[in-house]
Image 1 (cartoon, rainbow, N blue to C red):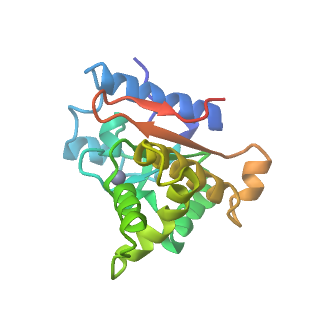
Image 2: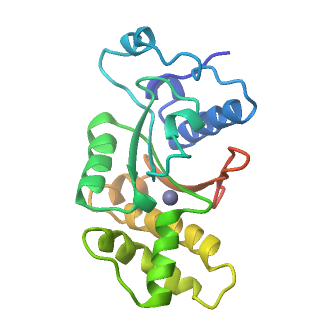
Length: 208
Ligand SMILES: [Zn+2]
C-alpha cells in the first residue's frame, strides 16, 4: 500500500489531503495501522530532512485523542496543535499561518471529540455562574458562545456544544487574516471533524 508521507505525495490539494487523513483514520479503526508499529528512531531519522507535511490538525489535549495515532501518520506527515477544547489564541493562529503560508499545507482540520472536558467546563461555568480563575477562564470564555448558542436548557447541550464549538473554530480560522485569501482561492480548506472515543472513527461535520 502506498502511503503518502508529505504534501507532494498527497497531491497538494485540500481534497487529496483530506482523503489521505481519512484513509489513515480508517487504517487505525480497522486495527491495521501502517505507521502505528513503527514509532522508532529509525522512522524518525528517515523523515529528518526538510519537512513537507500535508495537513495541520488542531485538536484537544485530551489524553484519549492522540492525533498522529488516530490518523495513523508517520514522522513528517502532519503538523499537530493541541489546546484544551482546541481553543484558539494568537500562538495557535500564528502556528497555523506558518504551516499554511510557509510550508504550503493545503488542509486545516479542526477535530473535536465526544465527552470533551473543556466544553463540559464551559457548560458548568455557565450553569453555575462561577467563572474559573487563571488562564482556564480563557478556555471557558472561548467555548461559552457555542454553549450559549445551543442553550443550557437543551438536554443535549454538551454534545451539541462540542459540535457547535468545532464549527465556530472552523469559521474563525476561515476568516483569519492570513488564511482567508488562500481559503477564498480554494488553495486551502479548513474543515471540522469529530472523533468518536468508542470506535476511533473521525467523522466530518460538514462533508463536501
Ligand atoms: Zn477535549
